[in-house]
Length: 479
Image 1 (cartoon, one colour):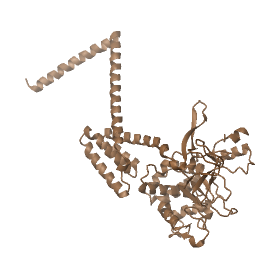
Image 2 (image 1 turned 90 degrees about the vertical axis):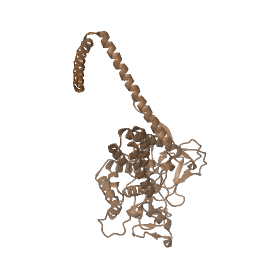
Image 3 (image 1 turned 135 degrees about the horizontal axis):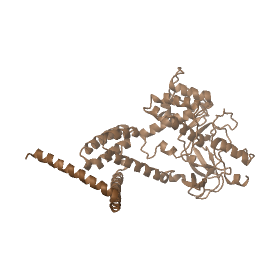
């Protein structure tokens, strides 16, 4: 008999037997309770075995991810743009070669793809490419490494920031309970050593700062906001007459960090992107679009030259912010930024969406400090519509956005004040009374008119500008 006939006959016999067994099985399932109980037990046993097997796979994946991350150090990654590009392509090529070997090459391939992701300038885009081009098992490992890396980075952040030499730390503090009884916490700035009244606790320079638009281009430095007393020391921008600097060092720093991109270059054409942004700032007396532009340009600059573990966005994403509702003004500002930066920073138009812009503006509105560097206490400065933190004896000439001082909370009886001891945008936090290690540091967000404001007036102003009801000891005892 032909093999084919044997096979065909066997298949037919098996088919008939299978049909017969199916009928018998169905009858037993419907009519025999003991059989049904046995089936349920077997089903549960099979489900448990499947779950156990899935857990083993997850555990094995997690172990692979953890072992892979443990073997990767920050020193493994190059810093210059040229080296990062070369490194990225090498890792991608190696990863592709490894996963073609099959499952035994998946772990090492995932490490290569993860390393490429760490140096790629637009990681979100590369993740989407991975999703379409690499095996699902490898993609799962890469995303596991990325997720674990982000988690560890978040956990580690407040162990290295602020730097120990600043004598402060950020800690979680209770802020009441919700209607459901859940505890609410906030982050505050805590002194790590004792300070006597009048002592400087720390100093810091801002991430970004800007002059009041009415003062730009005259006698204040565009970079450090210092007043330029001696005309001979004034340094003009090499490409425009819209801004001036107090020194060649400030001119160089500004150009490197943001001004080379935002300079109007004295264009007579009011329709050029840089002129449009500059003119809008002047006409509306609103410096925040310019500050956001500076932040974005500086962020991109630092990403290309800095080897720091945490970038500017890492520093500000944890800060509180005011909710800003979109309006025609914000729509115009977003469009101005996209046009001004789009041709110079690839991908920035996609990055500056409405949600991200409103969040950045909300962080500035909540955290910016007024800067007083004028040597003339009676100087008249056209005020911006924005409100700034802290009180000054001298007129405010601009605003700054600070990494550490943004964590300071308000009190109507603060134990510190901010001062600009060098008459530039370098901010010093000074104790106004004795401070013990472990004390939370507070600063006044509003001018209390030498104590003439009532509790209701203080709370009203604070809620209007910062959206919170003050519960400081002074407000609680005089409520």
